[in-house]
View 1 (spheres, rainbow, N blue to C red):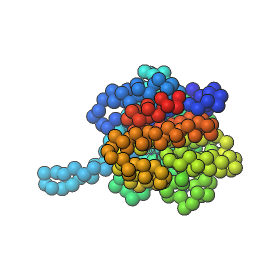
View 2: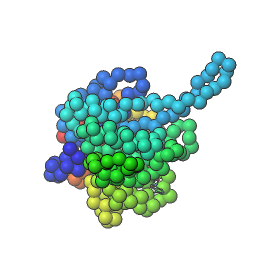
View 3: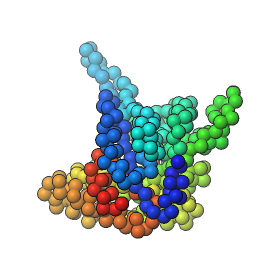
View 4: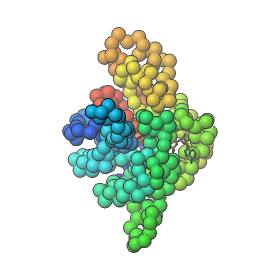
Length: 318
Ligand code: FAD
């Protein structure tokens, strides 16, 4: 079922969902099931699976020469989605990224997803490879999420890349996109970032999932700005409980978000990492209560495949 229909059917009740990372290459899918099982009691109508672009590693040869090799650390998004749908009877939402795919590869991936019965995709540009200073599009691929979105939208209207044969079958994906309450780090200002978000919605995006945030006021303001600018689609808050003191540095660095003083002070005062986890969970419970009161359609957790903290929060909320 489409995410927008799950939200409509909930008739104002806040739903629970979460996101998983595919296992690192060489690990079994059991890790995915172990990350899902403890959270199923909260009845997620959908579960997201992230996509990871290839990166480079350097292999040293006997001669001492280093060879740059392209390497995908976490393959398997599409197969994991199929396995989740088959085992748990919930919708799986694959993240589709521009990086690492030509348009033809994207088209083929979308056909696979449609045949597997996947109804939703989250369309993203994707992160830069670690070795690159900024995002470099794949030759023959897309540069921005809106370009990828256009391709999915076209396929939903029966338009494939090379119409040299009968293409009477249309896909029917419900398309989601990313939104940034604190601005995407490359955008010169919120206004410009907003313009591109609006463009994605005008081009057919039916829901938005936000970057994580720790100050609800930023989400409230973002929603209000969207509504004032004619963006009427559901805006799903993305949430990630703090689980270690190192995240006071790594989260702002990686995701370009602020951690409010109240939370950073509380974490700094903790005597050990167990206390940090407790503080992170308590903080997020309060954050979630406020989001539910506000009428957030879904609370969407970035679990990083570690269900423990999310389970404790969900127990207090759902
Ligand atoms: P875009 O919408 O393309 O925007 C990127 C930047 O370009 C922004 O600064 C925007 O303002 C600007 N821009 C947009 N359109 C245009 C245009 N037409 N012309 C000029 N400038 C433009 N990354 C992964 O690799 N895998 C994942 O699974 C993944 N999942 C994510 C899930 C969520 C909910 C979120 C919030 C992020 C996720 N990311 C993921 C990270 C995401 O790929 C990065 O944040 C990336 O840098 C931007 O992606 P985007 O889709 O927002 O890009």
